[in-house]
Image (cartoon, rainbow, N blue to C red; front, top):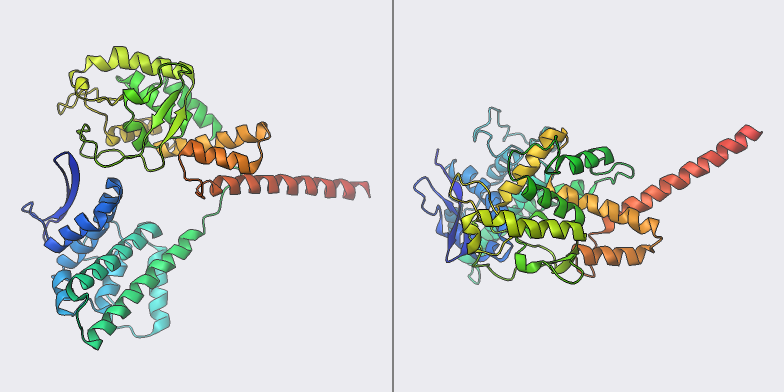
Length: 422
């Protein structure tokens, strides 16, 4: 069994991804070309995710002695039973054995029996529908790209072209089936993403002087990180790339500029460079928090020598790998929230605070009687969404359903009062 893995590296300050073999060499020149031409147009984290989906497919076929590049080049492609086997395996965790202990029924011809088997397999899936959909989509798009590379603009036999279109159509149907299933995502009208009692415990726990604070060191830094995410609703990546020069330590003393990445930041030494996915905008924080950030910059950050090599605010404070003073990693931010989750006995992560911010924003808007269209415009501006974005529709749906439930309760109370009066 060959050892195939994903490798991330820096070259000239730019991030790259490659799929390599056990000798650390590129597994396939076409896979490398696909990643660095098609996938590299995306944000780096997205490129990594898509490359992992391609890695899953290449591991599967390589360990079954199926060379996808050669198959497409000679027009043999992937047979229907071979694809069905891959599709079945897409339902398993990445760490699952490549030869699961099941009996393959590839000879089953009865359509109803095959559908029942597939439905049963989905019911016991080990991964989410979105994960399965992504794996199938990546295989399809990679096969389409390979086919265009080898046969684009050339005459191919009707048999090969027909076989190719049938295979691609089958993959598309499977993608769409998971898309329709995942669309059903009922919005909870009453439950908060973080119950108020848990949220209050988090706010108390993260205070540097709290007796419940789970951290032995970096208490001030961790407090500022959680507080910024809570007050601004920005993403983890946006927080990790905030620089000292982005903070308005004058005038209103309450704003931080959030910039969208424009090419690679050569001043950022991190392998996994954080990204700001949405539009550039200003995040508003209270003056007290800004003053605490300034204190961290002036008195705590300078204690770590390598902080002088860059302008990023939050730095690593441990030197186990010689990283003290370098910009904080996304993994470190995740570890902060993992530790808080264990102490709270409730799973909390950075993006959950973004949802909590939106809930609080909704409540404040209703309390001040802000009309819904204006509230959504304000939300789009605060979140850095485009004017045409529909991202806020989830929160709008929750508000509508909440009001509907309240109206139905009042109606039920009136009905009960009338019945009691009879």
